[in-house]
Amino acid sequence: MSISVVVLGDQEKIVRQIEGYRGELMVTRACADIAEAIAACDTGMADALIIADAQLVPPMEQLDALLLQQTAVVLLFDRPENWQPLPDVLHLPAASAMAELEGRIRTAVQSLTHAGADAALGGFEPEDDGNGRSGRIVSFWSAPGSPGRSTVALNYAVEVAAAGKTVVLLDADTYAASIAIQFGLMDESASIAQLCRAIDAGTSDVARLDAACSLVQVGEATMRVATGIPRASRWPEVRASALRRAAMLLKVHYDYVVLDLAPYIELDEQLSFDTQAPQRNAVTVEMLQCSDELFMIVRADSLGIPRALRAIDELDEGLPGLKPRIVFNRVGSSSTGRNPKRRLIEAWDRFGPTHDVAGYLPEDHAVCNASVLGGSPLLEIAPKCLLRTEIRALAGIKSTDSAKKRNSRRIRAEA
Image (cartoon, rainbow, N blue to C red; front, side, top):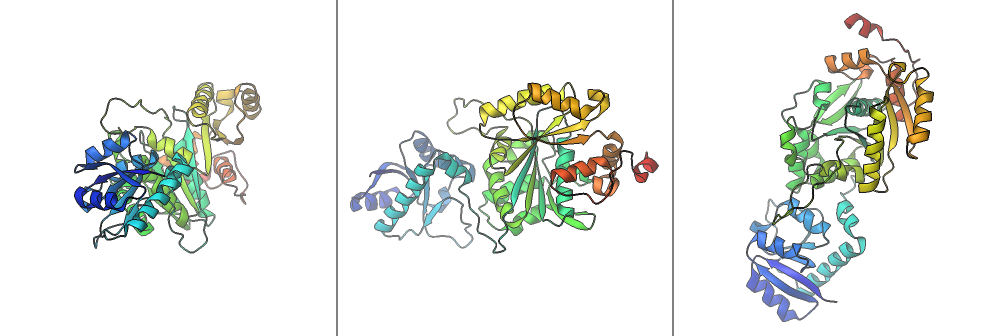
């Protein structure tokens, strides 16, 4: 077996060592520039990239792209004192024996080749914290058109936290972030971007991610919230692979990682760039793929349902294998006529795909408006409203309160 490698850094020394050993490693190009080395790997001429200089390590975005195309990345230099280990990247001392170097590179290449691109997408396995916790990534997605996705995601996370689970809520909507507004938080810090920067710096310490998030009190419980970017033009700050790594790390330490995702899943065509161009909707696509549970919020009216059907067609075409659970929102007689639930079932059975319908959330403008105005979840604004009861049911929580279709006293007094 021959393993082709591109060397970046101290070319003469490394090339002499590899060629003198006469093993499986074969140098196809020696580069002194990062862009040249990345371009050489992009052409498919290398099974592995050996980086021999700490000053020439490419950013994590480019390393992720190499791993996705099944090119192993090897750092061959002594670790500086302040160096953070990079996930999925093989780091060996500069004085490593050639037999060990060849064996480790062979193993890394075989691992990527056998597992394919999925190994690169899911290969980051953070260390267990020792508590035996196995968390879940729960994502909320929808078709375009403001069906109430963020409101449902926020209150779902709140209810799970109130039930005694550890929860972190990530606002990953790179078009119109709103979680900070609904919680009454300052959103200029863009916690979601801070998480990505921490991961790109090579951190595997969940305490650094916790520090970037806001600690929010909900009833008698607390939860972490990573606010979204306040301006849609800042979307490049939220890198898909970095956010995935952050979610996977948080999943080990939290019972639930809840994500509010943007609706768009189209990826731009790769144009004539020398390097891989960033993708506007890559965050949504990647987080959909790594979700343990996916809820699709559908606005229950004559506009929302056709939009949802088209979005599901696009999802099945672009990301086959995903099975979103459908949640009809704003269900009421004003938009669907008498007996709205029965009419929705009939329409979905006739026109809709064979996806599980997880719930029907009632229309309650007064409660939702008061919740946003007060910067508080339903648990605090209207604890006995029917909408909160149905959201609790989505999370598998049985309500001990009797649901009321009318507004609570607090809402009537504030209205």
